[in-house]
Length: 590
Image 1: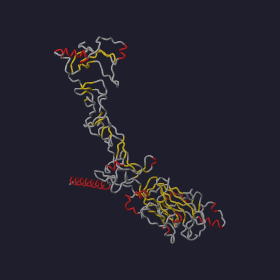
Image 2: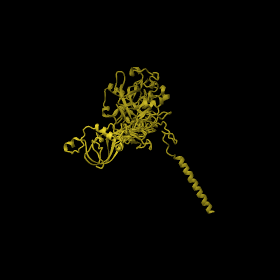
Image 3: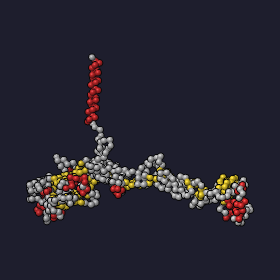
Image 4: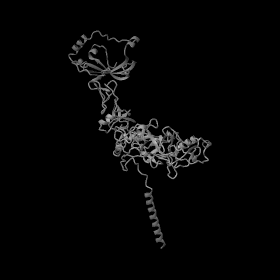
């Protein structure tokens, strides 16, 4: 019975192990696919956005006024019932109320508050401007901005919220709150929002709704899109997209809500009070000092809800390894920039666009057939192509040219044995500098344009019935046709003597004596050579001699400086009439 028992235990262990692995595989799923692409084999791009966050959390807030530079008394009231006063002292952590309390963790069980310095008396009430500036250090698309005021404190009667899209260089009004909108901000209270003004700041007084019954702690929240007509079609509303975009937020408290009655102040007994505060004052000054201690701004939380702005091309923002760790969008869809606001290099075949639910607007690479590293976008070409392609390749390499580097440039032709994407797809024409009439050859065959009487792919030889001349303009001339008499056959005909007589009458004076080559003659002549005549052939009115150049005393040169006569076998052409006149006198094997 032991063997079956062991087998059952082993089977049970294997089953338990398999079940555990299955449980683990379900519990710890594989890392999710990139949310910017559909989870399929094609990896089709789609819109993606970063997570919704409180962009103000643990961000630095600059306050124009904060209590505690010197120990300062502040008091709290619920609108008639006196509360014991306390001390604000920036040098003691437990008594300090810095601006960092605005963006720390908002714990309802342990609220922390930022407090301004006490307001000073004004003929029209307690009035003073206090400013809070929050830098987000990155472009965000904001959904709301909220301010939670500390318990037993008055809410401001007049305040304004501003935004910046250029990191605090300029400011734009975002929202106004006031009981006297027209007087304070020149705005009609509770104006209707239409498409014509949905990108403008409005002024409301709803923040005073609870003042009559309970003027204590409350939250003021501004929704950036609430009531805006185009909010339902946000993807297609550039106006609202710009409206919710911000890099910095500024809150300006213009006036504190005046109390309904003067609170009664209980005697203060606090060892932390400075000797100056405990110094006896006359009755009027002491009352004014105690009264002003109630009037200060106190905010427990500043929250800014929104998403890192990536224009639908990134699912997260990451700190940069450079630039002091500033946030950057982790761009997809071949986009680039801190906000994925442009196409990355070489992906300009279509215009950049914000991703939407219907179209991810992925940037496309330019089609340069692997012959260029840069390109640019042209809207006119894009429209002419039916909004398909608008890229123009720049600085085509490998001897290519054209918008897509798709043909060979002047002086080169296509090697059809290689694809256009090959680095050696274009071959040089190699047109002969004298025989061709230009450097451009046929893009398909490579045939150069030849001058009259010249042939060959590169125009490097004379055509049939043409002979080479010494002219660069007409390097090949038509060979002379056969005439009525032939010097090679006149000796055997009855007309030879008559032909010779006719030729002799036309010869004129032609000294046939040998001439010595002196220095003066040498310098005046174009060239001086010693040749040995080895053969003779009659070609029409011309006689072709086969000669061997034995010595080159003075080398002849063409207009471009190239030698056209070299040592060795070559040909020499002379008119038959000149030979008949023995001018010159040429004999074979001499």
